[in-house]
Structure formats: structure tokens, C-alpha cells
Amino acid sequence: MVGDSSSNARRDVIVIGAGPAGAAAGIVAARGGASVTVFEKAPYGRDKVCGDGLTPRAVGALNELKIDLDFESDDGAHRIDGLRMIAGKTTRELAWPDTTRFPPYGAVWPRRRLDAALIDAATDAGAEVVFETEALPIIERGRVVGVKAGGQEHRADLVIVAAGAPGQVARMLGAERVADEPFGLAIRTYAESPRHADRHLEACLTLTDENGVAVPGYGWMFPAGDGTVNIGVGALSTMKNFKQLNLNKLLGSYRALVEPTWQIGPDLERPRAWRLPMSAQKRHGAGWVAIGDAAGLVNPMNGEGIDYGLESGILASELFLADPMTAPTRYDQLVGERFDSFLRTGRRFSFLIGHPWILRSGLRLAVGTDTIASITLGVMGNLIDSETPGAAGRVLGIADKALALADPLLRRTRAAS
Image: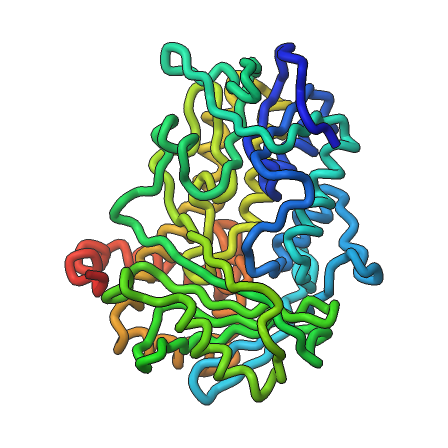
């Protein structure tokens, strides 16, 4: 690991942010022979608040990157074979589907260990990694030509923005969240549980606050296999009085619900919250691309974005290696073809379930039959996109068209105040 950088020689690629998306971009670019520097504000071994769940889609991307999940090691991931969905009094437990696209298993891997494994792989591939250093883009005549970091200018042919939720970098590039689109908030902590080795993620879809008001979001129990579980809740901004929602109380209500079945102990750390961006005004421009959370690539139905971060990071570097000149434009085009329809449908759906009576009815339907529950599994597992065949793909297409027609009405009648 590199603590600082004294060289300001030109790079092929500079990455801002060393989370999963940024590390994936660094791995692929460096393995392809590019000179790469990754700048990260936090120190090595940082923790990132997150649910820690990895879908089969995320595991597929990690396999593509040749990252060993090392299920047998204390530092490795805990294997997950499926999802348990709870809606009111109905519980359905489904295995991840066995397809040619993704492996039939997911994982729980706390972010401190996942991020370390990825950034170590980037370093092993030859990328320079500079920790505890903020990097900001240098813009000349409308083009990003590098970054300023550690008091020096560093030039590059491509700057990959993997800085997470919108901040100063996004403001400088005009890549902030689209104001009228939904976003999410989530909070999590860890607790001991005798069920820490459970092989299913658990998602309670019918979440209510301390007053019994239905909340568009879900509560989760993610077993880590190390004696602990990750317990958390997430909520969408489309509910009425969202700004008054108390996440700590929401987590407390959910904790009381799951304590008897999971036998969880006291919190092992103070609950920590984070924002889930679900849109971006821009995700590319001259000399730069945004990937992962920085590009708004977060599933509005589940708040998950690690898999999209890994995939978008891989794609950005592959396109750069193929043709540096066209990489930003091609990246935006291909990401759009792969994800935009599904994510757009999710954002529109979030306006719909912002209304409590629609939310209650809709979520009961979501697990009402095995067929519908299997589609819900695909949605919650990020297994649906423009390339999805069969019933799930057809449902996505129909939903996209129907919600497109309803979108003006959904926005006019949105529940959020």
C-alpha cells in the first residue's frame, strides 16, 4: 500500500475513490497495462457503512475480477444461498436462481474486509494507491485533465469518479443527484446472534415506524458467519413526512420485531446512517466518467449498489483500454442500455409505494405466490436488467411502459411533503 505520492508524472487513469467501484476500475486498468493511481480520502482498512450483502450479481463480478471470497477463512465472506422475504404474516424463503449469468449464491462480507481485498488486488495488479488524500478534478476548457491531490497536480487521460454519494467532486462536474428523483436513507449496526451462520438473507418488506406508519423500504438481517449479524433498515424519500423520519427509532422498531426469532444481543457499535443516491445529472464528460454510487447506480427497490459499482468500474476500464478517446461516450451508452430501464422503473415505482395504502397492498402481493415471489427475488437480488429473459424480463418491460404513462400523475400526487 502507498501512503503518499511524490510523483506527478502523467497517468493513463486516475481513480477518485477506493471503494468497490474504484478498486474494480483500478484492477482492470492496471491488469490491462495502464498506469493507474487511485486516491482515497480515508486510511487503509477504513469501514464503510453498508448492509454488507453481496448478491449473486456482485459475486459474479468478484469472480470476474478473480477475487477469492475465501468462505473458509475468518477474513473471508459468509456464503448466502437465498433470500427470506417477509410481508406481514407471509414468509417465503427462496434459493438464488441457478443461471448461466450469475452464480447461485451470494455472500455477506463486511466492507472493511471486502474493500481491503479489492484494493489489495488493485495494488497487486500494479496500481498506485494513495490513502488519506483527497483528489479533486482539474477542469480546463470544459475537459477534465487530471486531479489536484496532496498539493500537486496529477494529469491523466481519463479520470474515473468513484467518490460515492454526491459531494464536492459531483458539484464540480455537474453530476449531482437529480433533485426531483427519489433517494434513500439507511442505518445499520451489528449484534451477536446464534443464527449468525444462517445461509439466507432476511428482508422484512412491511416496515413500520414507531407509530405504526407504513414505510417504503425494508428491514434486513444479514448473517455474517462470524458470530454477528448486520441489522439495518432503509427508507425511500417518497413517503409523506420523510424529513421527520427518525432512523434510530425505525431501527429500534425493527429490532424489537426480530429479537425473538434471531435472539440478538445488544448493539456492538453505535448505529450509523448513510444516504443512497439513486440518480445523477451526468455520469460522463470530456475526460471523465462516474461509476457506482457516483453515477446514481443504486437499485431503488433495495438500496443495493455494490454489484453495479463493480460492473460499472470494470466496464469503464475495459472501454478505456479498448479506445481511450471514445471511452466516456461509450461508457454512458452501454451503462444506459444495461441499467437505465430497470432503475428508471424502480424510481417510478418508489413514487407509487410512497402512498401507504398502495404500499401495504403491493407488498403483500409481492410475496403472494411463488411465481410473483420469484420475480420479487430477482428485483431484490439485482438480477433483472435489459438482458433478463423470461417472465421477469417481460414483467420489467410491462412495468416500465405502464409506469412511464403514469409517471406525470405519480409525481403530481407524490406522498412526500
